[in-house]
Amino acid sequence: MTITAIVIALVLLVLSAILTFFMHKTKSKPNSVFKKSLFRVRQMRFFPVVSLAYGFLALTILFCGMLIVDHTIGFARYHQEDHAMFRVMLDRVPYNSNFPLVATQPLDEKTTPRILVIGDSFVWGFGVPNMNQNWWHIMGDELRRQGYDVEVHALGWSGTQTYDHLRWLRDTDVLAQLQPDLIVLGYFLNDADLSGLGYTIHFHDPTLPTGSRNRYGHGFLHPVFPSLYFYFDWRLSERFSRTENRFNNSEDGYTPWAMIERLTESPNIERFETYVVQPMSELLAAAGIPMIVIPVIDAPRELYVSNLQAVTPLFERAGFAVYNPYDAFVEYFSSHRRLRNYMHASPTDPHHGPASAWFHGRFAADVLRQHYSHLLGQLSEFERENLVIEINDWLPHMLQPQVLYKSATSSQYTIHFPAGDAQQAFLVWHRHMRRPYVMLNFRYPVRLSSISIEGENLRSAQIYTLGLNLDLGFDDQRPRRLRERNGVFSVNCGRYVTSLLIRATTVEHAGALLTLTIENQGGREAFF
Image (tube, rainbow, N blue to C red; front, top):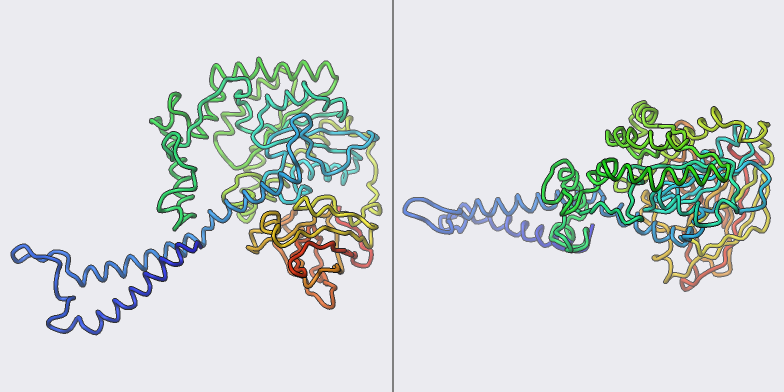
């Protein structure tokens, strides 16, 4: 709730209280102002003062009610947090046009079968604070759980299209360095865009005049009711996308969903096959590397049906098998209403939430196991005892965890906790706590018993855990605070922990080198 809205609400409430008190005391008097009206025309009274007073009270109640609704919806807050997360993730996974590798493991000499996943923001991990919870990472874990010793690497970046993915494979040394045995293309609805080749379908935001203000930065409704502004702005965009009007045509520009429909129409769809799909087929055939296409679904939309009906024959004619998860996706989220709460990264971010990532990871793993097991190496029993308490991902990037030792029972890391003046810019906002924290993510979920944290400049600390919800099958992103005693935080929840959220207070808000000792519950194995 913004300061502007709070000030306006307080002023209106004070004025309403004074007006109500004054009206209650005087309206029964013969000469009371509340028996008068602003003006008369003969015997007709216009705008009785008492009606205006009640109208003002009603508007005050409406305004305060809208503030409560706006705060409850929280769309603007989610939108701001998504952008804050995006800025922090840029430091973790910086864009490299020559090698946009989403690195969660070192690129060592190849010793096992290697799978390369390539795609856009759904592969890059937009809105995913724990890269181990990205769909292609879950795919790799599921294959290893089934007994296939494979490496999974990913190339991805927000806003890229299949043409960009072709360019990475053709114009860089990606294939030579990674030497993949199989490529999985994560195709999304707008990936047939050919803007990179100069064939641009003009895009226009229907809620704004051409060349005007930033979408969320102007107007009366935005500073006072930012979430309601966001909601009605989105609804207006949805409405315009279904009608042919001055905001939705080839001259003035198409709305987002209308633009996606244009991508599968002639001549764009023929150009997509000629300049992207066929060259990709020739390139990979010459390299002897098979590729399959797994469309990425963000929500049940009829647009997926028509879009995939148009692009699937193109890929199949080029020799790429397409495994469409749409029907299974709809069935999965229809099976349990609770799952829909975990479909998206946030109410304003349609990228994968925990349930969508889990679904796609399991779906892709099943496809590879059923149809490409010959490329996955020798099937064997996975050695669970080799799983250690390992931190392989973190936010913000400046933490730079350094391992002192790690094992299945106990691990110790040092982290560089940022100074006070840098915390607001670099710490992670977790939407269930409304406060910023640093985030440490475990390679495999583990059952922890205790965590101790120490440092020369450390005054106090708070630690929360995120973990697997075994009923749902994935990390539900619900934090639990750990109890602390003499610098040791006890973990009594008994669940498999995926992440640590840490907030620390340091001497004079200075940066600090902190040491974390993380212990397992009696040596019990990590979850796998």
